[in-house]
Amino acid sequence: MEGFLFSGTYEFFSGTYEFSPTSSPDEILAAMVTRFKRAAEDSDLVDVARRVGRTPLEIMTIASIVQAESTDKRDMPKIARVWRQARGARDAALLDP
Image 1: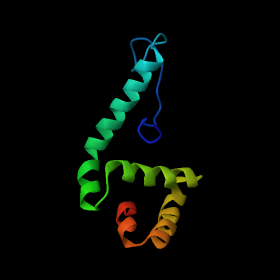
Image 2: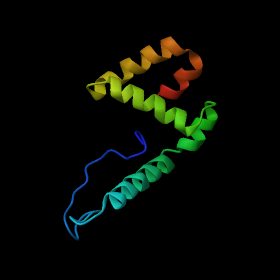
Image 3: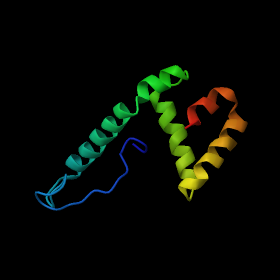
């Protein structure tokens, strides 16, 4: 599920945020997946993937690799460049901002 659980700050206060202290794990996971779907739609993930000849899963996998390899957001472009050089032009298109 890595990559599909929208990373963000989730607050657990009754009546104020997405979850209450009594939310079940299933409810919490469902809300995180829903936020991912919303973000994927907002960023046109399916269309971007199609344009570069990849699936949304492949895009998310590569993004997860770049994120896992970085300790700082500022490192992500460097890691993406290494990926681009190692994997060639087809994968490079996936990582361009």
